[in-house]
Image (cartoon, rainbow, N blue to C red; front, side, top):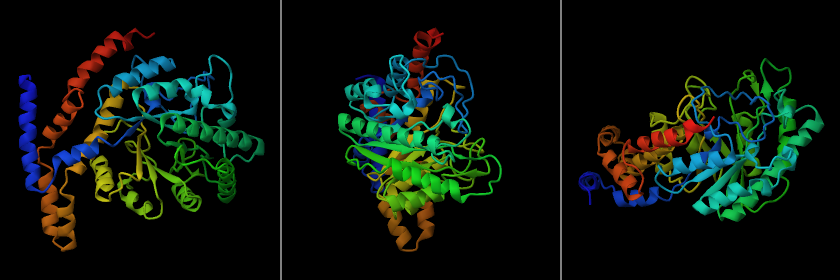
Length: 423
């Protein structure tokens, strides 16, 4: 055993004693953490490009900034980059894949004609790694979405195209779930909305509800596929009105028994996702989280260990919601190393969950029930200086991934050996 490993284990032993004094079972917390899977979003690795090669702009209010070298250009390159990122992240996780990442072997396959076979290499890759997968229809970067409307489009033929795409994606999701032995969450997000004030807010929402009902008409076993719907406050080009708002989808999810996707960047800047979790789980069995970091707007910055990220994790643990919430990431930054962005964001999400699992939750709850808010606040503040870092380092050590910032050395080597050699 190396001196560094001995030092880490001594620090962990001491940290475990500190936490035990507050009634926290560190070993139980680590065991629970190891069972949590985070769904890594494929689109961080290639700037939401996909592999259709249509030449169509992203659209849908989406924008990726930066031109850091090494962007993945092929499915194999993207999988290699994901392999690298996953090797530096403790735990077993998932992949979140968009329909535009289909592999059609050079043939033109329209989105409403996609089938599970077009994602077989992704399924085989995930199966070999013992991972689950999640899925998303791609309602953007397409000529039939160029005017900013899809499922709520006034043209019935355009709506029907996108309905068929949604139906195809649910079947793909079910095939993924059946192949991998874990339910695939298939999440519907659309960009539909108006840049300026609409005269009719009602009709597009009626069309959207009708389209969604058509997509979900086919019964699919939830052990293979779970349906989710995702709202948004505004987007570039839909600043004044978004058809699929939070309120619309909350009502839809409750009435149709679907998962509601809460995206951390899809609300007013003064709203926080953490405050919504317990509210919506009063009425829904499960939800999906898209964890992102908005800076002044829905800018999808790389997730960091922020106060809000910690608050999200605290809500999941304090409310005993971990088995009812699917955690996915959703950010894209082309101004930094794309593999590093995955590692930073995912490790921070796991750190936040560990911090929450190391809270003396029962003691805090008891103080609150007794009305002793002074002690509650004092204890919460004291927890902030407990030796969490030693527990995190030990978790990484046990998972055989780099401890501390050592993972960055691996990414830099990968950048020199692989990324910088891409044209």
